[in-house]
Image (tube, rainbow, N blue to C red):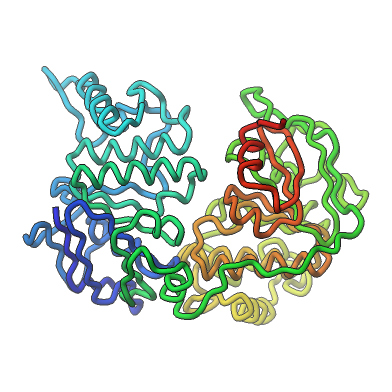
Length: 499
């Protein structure tokens, strides 16, 4: 099926999110939409999927103009979407999720779950997904959950599939598997729109690349284009894709972790006798497949994890048993892996978010009263310094793109004296321009003598930033290695192979 978008314009008040966008996706083609966060890619796809109504322009399928009043209309016309944040019910089975919204029935309106199971088996067998129709979503790895989303779309006979930042929550291995699935779909004649900001993936999979910047199509490129060329189109300037940093000059041990152990609510060991030291003026990156204790390690240090055994000592002061506020006040800066839930308050303004952990003290407060002028001046200064793009510091943070939300979190955490800086998944979901900025801030923090702990599932990021790499597997530190360690060796360690 051919998809054509003609002159799509979408406004939110005075802000134009999509400005007269023209795109054609041919049958059996993988068409990549590349652009920064906030460029308008997801807005455009939400127009296509019927979630938004465009002020101008038209959508055509095989040359016939379409009118979608909601996602149901889009699905009936043959359009499916695999969202970045999966639209699955965790306690339902695979088959129940696939049938949700268009449930097959038999006599007396009884749900025909066996038909749904059979549909899952058919599509799963066709693409080698290996899905169990009766498996509960909450028990499945993230990569397998994404396959369920794909089956859900295909079960409704989707001829055009939209993948919105599909690799943001996947490991490198799962990303390779997804690329293979997309190639199979293409061979079967499915038209694919692939939304991404990851240059390596776009170059690996796309037939055609359209670049969007600030709501407009600014160019197209072949997948043979260099990463530097694509990055320059995305952000409108030359972008340095390499992390430049001088060799570390580590000082004394600042953070010392000994015998750290923890269990989750089900009694499963999540941290298993962890020993780790971080020195002033070095970046220690924790690598591993997500779910092997990295999140728990960061949360334990910041005070978000209870029931701990062992010791976490910052400059000789024990952190276990302290509240999150007490840990922050001890000089720990923390960028959480899920910024939208744990790093910001969406309904608060930029200015309010920038003082979240200091709103009760000088220089921002006098007793119970905020010094509004001081707060505003500080927010404006940090917005300029960190290039937070908005309509002003009174803008609600929830209205910003992911990259700009991350800049607000970084500005808040790095704008006070620190004895330790922790960043979990610091560039997850960010574009190349924002990634460069975040990396520069992390290196500058190290160079100022602050010990830095990075938790990332992006192996390229780990290797580029780290002065040392600690690899975690099943809650244990299996080894601490140099950043020039081969990828094969790192991959083996991430799989728990130590020898």
